[in-house]
Length: 322
Image (cartoon, rainbow, N blue to C red; front, side, top):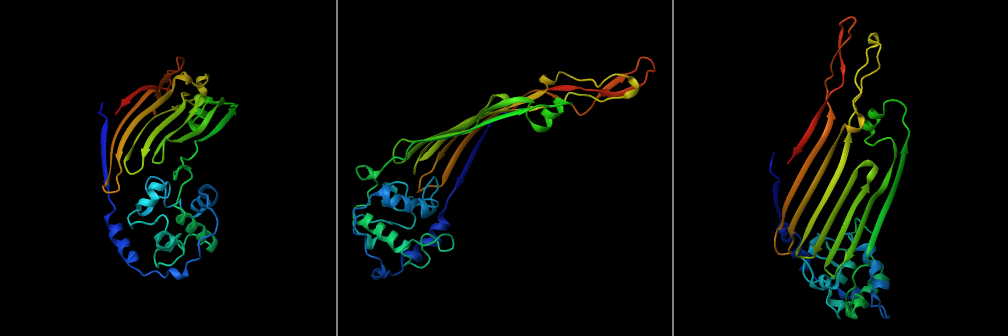
């Protein structure tokens, strides 16, 4: 028996900061080339969020946003990232975000010209009006509104009828014959504020003895706590060989008992501060137990001729943990 292991990892991004920040930040910007701000009262969910979703969130949201700059909430958007402040509420003309999306700064065009279409003048005008009006995220008095709860699930139902060696079918296909089904996968996300989120995901397939549950609590610019449990089963063929002169059918072990269940529990704690390397501490426990067929058959002797053949199936117990 081996004791559970503990993992430590660390990663930093200093080279990216030094290599990309200062050259772009030092460039002169011709603000006369900017389209004028839209002359409407801008709503974030109606006018701005669609622009961010189509052109910005892919790189500037999530756990590790590019250049450490996230547009997922107002606090992060106004605070800025590795390049510095991007939004100056009330002053779109001086806001670097507008300079980037208007493609006035060489090397800092957003979205990158090689990947996506540039924003239209009308979209830039909406962003300018949004910033001039305070860069509010609707929903909580100018702060970012919490994303709605998301629940996604997929159901799965299967049925197989097998003629012949059912045990071999189970071993090869990885599932028993007959009916099986359940929840193939599910995911539930719930925001607990502008910078905190809880996620629960997994699957439940009773007929296949396949289960998984994963939980995560994440806080932007602080860290995360994650853990989970997984269980699945592997079946084995318990049918032996066949020798015609003996005049008997193939020997077979109890097919239902020939399986090995694998169970894994894990936990990890992460520190993810913008000013520090990312540090993760993990713990994992793995158990495998059951009964499986062996690769060698035992001898069977014909009582009439004393002829011996290795055709009798054998099995062995499995009990491992680490």
